[in-house]
Length: 229
Image (cartoon, rainbow, N blue to C red; front, side, top):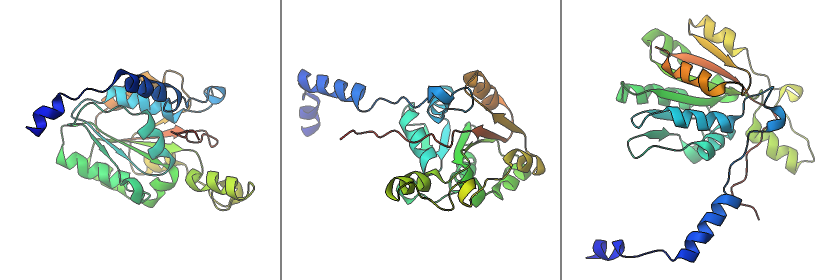
């Protein structure tokens, strides 16, 4: 049968060697930005830690833009049962929070983690009330780099450093999410840097009920290209 024949196909060892070379040289992820690790949280490190802590039945809901790229590049899924939810190329800002809420109702025994940017959070911030009122135990990690990084970085490159409405100096500003979470009656944690980050994340995921986590992310943390030309 075709299935039997397919199982007999072996990949030549030179191609295995080529794949290992590509993985090591072009697909390696090293986005910790060591020069700023004392003052900011590395999103790549955060993604690796969340990946390690979530179990096979758990759910990861990620928004769009840079925070999606950081998580996709650093997250290692644990089999087909685990769910990594995103709108992918459609990239509607704010999607990840209501998606996480819906995912929890579909699998209420799972740990559900949501990762979203500061800009996306403001698109659906009213869902904080949904979390609080219904006591939905979603852990929302807000990667706050105080900017629309997905717009800011390309416009800087294409328009000789000029950008508009993408950072505090050009007309965009993020609110105090810690104060907002408290106003909704939600527990809140702030992650300032990489120090003991794994231990802090583990404690957050063990908390009962919803938690808002404001993550101090470097405004200059870009994304790492997967292919080099």
